[in-house]
Each structure stands twice: as C-alpha cells, then as structure tokens.
Picture 1 (tube, rainbow, N blue to C red):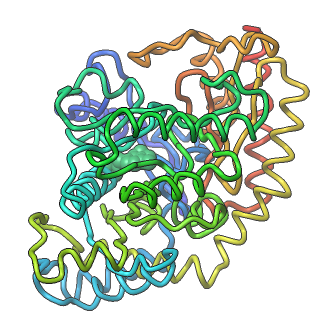
Picture 2 (cartoon, helix red, strand yellow):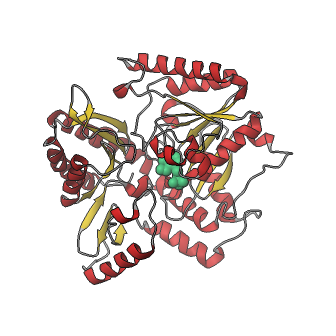
Picture 3 (cartoon, rainbow, N blue to C red):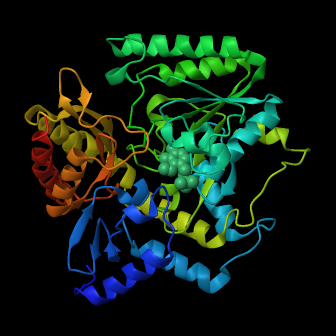
Length: 451
Ligand code: PMP
C-alpha cells in the first residue's frame, strides 16, 4: 500500500477550500463536515490525520474493484496519451470495444449500447426510448426506489428524495413493489407478497389504462431504498405483465450491476431479460463518469430508419470507455464476480445473520454477493425503526452514534435512514472483510443501547 504520512495542515487547506467553494449534493451546506481524503487504494482510504478506513460503502456503491486498480489506472493513462477525447458521432476503439464487452455480458438480445455520463441520464434516456417506441406517455415505477437526481430521473424515483423536486406533471405513476419485511399487502410469506404485489401492479395498469403505459421501470434489486431482494417469481411476473400489455420493461442495474450481487447483472439471478437495462457505477468502478442503456433488438430497430432524438456531448467518452474495457477485463481475469458470489454466500451473509441473532438492534438482514442491508430497529417484534423515518433524511442520534462507532473501529459505513448497507468492493479479500465485520459487530453494540 502507498505510504501515507499524516499532514494535518494540508488537510486543513483542502477542507477550507471545500467549505468555501464546493456546493455539496443532497446537503444543507452549513450543516456538513466532509472528511478531507488524502488517498485511497484497494478497499481502503485515508485522511490527512493518519486515520485509515476500510470502505464498506465502495464510494457510492461503485468502486466494485476497489480504488486505484493499477490495470485500470494504466489503461486510463494509455488512452489519455493516445486519444483523450473524441466526439460521439465517430467510431472510436475504446468506445466500440466497451460496447462490445458490455453487450456480450448483458442478458438476452440487449446488444446495442447507448452511453451516458452516469445513472440518472441513463434512466432518462431509457424512459424516452420507451415512450418513443410505444407512442405512450406514462412510466410506472416503484415507491421504494431511487433512479437519479436529474429532473425526469427524480420524478421516476419513488422515495421521498423525489418530493422537493417533483414537478407533478412528469407522466410517472408509482406503485408498491414487494418487500415482505414491511409488507404493504399484509402478506406473511414471500409467495403471498409476490402474488399480491403482481395483482396490485395489474390493477394499477388497468386503472391507468394499459394503452397509456410506455414502461415499467424497476431496480432489479432496489439499492439505496434498502437492498430489497424481490421474491422468486416477481420479476418474471412483471415480465409477463409487460408482454401482455405491450409495455417496455426497464431494469435499472446502475447499482446492482457489474458483479455487485455475485452475477454480472442482478437480472441473471432471476432469469429475466428486460427490454432496456440501465447501468453506470461498477461498469468502470467509477474511475471516470460513465453510464448507459443496453437496448433490445426490437427497440433498436425502432430507431433503425428513424433518428433517435437525443444525445450527449460526452456519450461514450474514450477515457471512461477505456476504464470500462480495463475494468471488465480485470473482473473477468481476476474472477471478481465469482469471488463476490462465494464470499457473500460463505462469509458475509452467514456473519451478518449470526450478528442479527446476537444484536437486539438488528431487525432484518437481506442481500447477496457484496450487496447487503441491515435494518436497525428499536424492537425486533414491532419492527419499529431505530429512528422514525424522516423524509429530510436528517441526522439522528442512534444512527449517528452507530456510524461514529463504526468509523472509530476503522470502517466507513453506509448509513441511510435506519439502515446500514454492507457494500464493500466486490474484490475485497476475505481477511479484509473479516476485519470489517469485527468493526461492524462492535458498532452494532452501540446501536443496541438504543433498543
Ligand atoms: N439508479 C440507481 C439504481 C442508482 O442507485 C443511482 C445512483 N445511486 C442512479 C440511478 C443515479 O445514478 P447517478 O448518480 O450516476 O446519476
């Protein structure tokens, strides 16, 4: 690992400039205190004061092969030396090679790739493609979802992050997707939850008018809303409903894709092929901004003789695509997807379930691969969240105490509402993971004090 000597003075300067001039996402600017980060490598990052953290968040769940992978850094450097940028209307090796490698891995006939700068614009373009393909106006999406921070993506988002920016005229209708732990359908089993959620979706479509619905957009496994693995049969059921009504099925794999769940795409677990699939984040471990939409043959054909009315200056940026080519190569050659699958099944999942038995604050454990959520509760019986849900996502004492304890023990935790998500890099080593789990265990003891 790169040597890193503490340099608090340099850290203070970085922090001062940040505080003076950087306007941070999703934040009340005066109420935040961002950590000044000096460096990062593999599964770790460190600050200027000599503290090192094991990153249990993978950044924003995107450094699927960790920080500073030498092969990806070298590929970016080589591409920069050769051709840093070139406009999207031209055929460029890095771009065509990235598209080929992605299309080879996406399920079914999702063989054409439209590149974007990230996840939100991928979702925006998927919605637009579905509307143009069907000639219908509406998009249906789940309440418990996050699809991005640009206007249409925020409208499609279901969770309360939508509220402050919802224009209310976006042609988006929300519905309840399945989530047994907090069932909206009074279900007691996965089978009931699945059947009732599908019936609810059918009813929603019937009342909206099937001929007005262009697309159903779902995260294959809703991520920021709580890593809610859908029950067996649900996504296949949605596929059937889409086929019956001529609706485009969009799966958002921005967070769950590229190895996170222990398959190349989460859809692979469920044997479901959507018509459009969005991706970003893990496609190049987030080293250079990149996202995209993988497009089925039928939808690509719609735009065979008729122009697709949309594009982006940096679509398929060579630096980002070179990073994607190298990342996919690393994942394939180093067996990262299989590693995430087996480490999740043999070590991470069992360890989290064992902690849930011991800690009164852990109400639910769910996930697979390197994609897990712990739901923290005051009371396992009533399932009362450790904090009341707060639409503004304001800091709250129990979760803040948990997060502080986790950091003190050397892990950087992902905390959202009353949940902590355990989402380390997909290539984290078993010993690193075990070190992090010991820290998590200690931090959960702090959460237990609030039960
Ligand atoms: N979709 C999903 C499922 C996501 O998790 C995210 C980001 N967390 C987005 C879309 C938006 O991606 P971006 O922030 O790159 O625009």
